[in-house]
Amino acid sequence: MTALHQWENCPEYIDIGDGEHRVQLLKQKDRFAIKGSELPRNIGEVEMHLPGDDINIIRGTPSLTAAANYELLPVYAPTGSSPPAVVTQRIFVRLDQDTRFETVRESVEALGFRIDDIPSHAPHCAWLEPESGGVGDSLSKLALLRALPRVVNAEPQVLRPRDRKSGK
Image 1 (cartoon, helix red, strand yellow):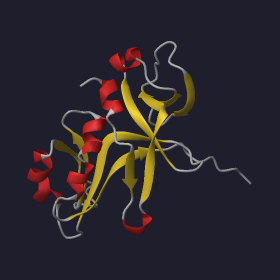
Image 2 (image 1 turned 90 degrees about the vertical axis):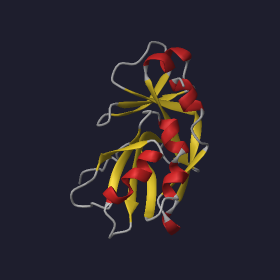
Image 3 (image 1 turned 45 degrees about the vertical axis):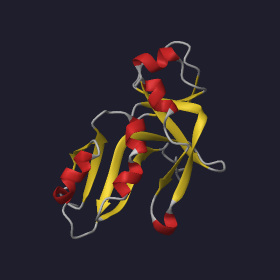
Image 4 (image 1 turned 180 degrees about the horizontal axis):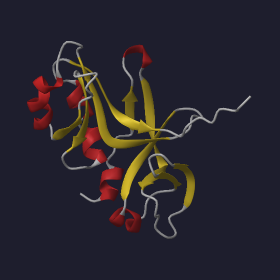
């Protein structure tokens, strides 16, 4: 599947958070993101740059040229005038407090994910990445991850622009 197909097949909505703090984000069809510092020519208007992650949010829809040579990421935003957020292929999963992540490794791998990192201070949590490397694959399996036994929460990594605080 091409990067353009991956981008097109990302879900229209994703949920972030859990319980009463859950927020629904809507896919922005007039924006996409490209990872990397070098952008293709005539890419369109760069709306925002996330410097720490080296990601550019572009206004418009991706062209076949951009899709062929660059990693495309979907842009989501809550309804209203909130700033856009870029969703990556990484998923953070939190299990019951007393469950070590190693106990669900087989189930996670059966869904096509690999464990990227288990924080030493939180052995019940892990960052996952899809074996395919595609953000569309990751987002399409989010509900399956959430349905695994002992999973408390699973959500994609969301990158947002940093708030600039004014100095006093």
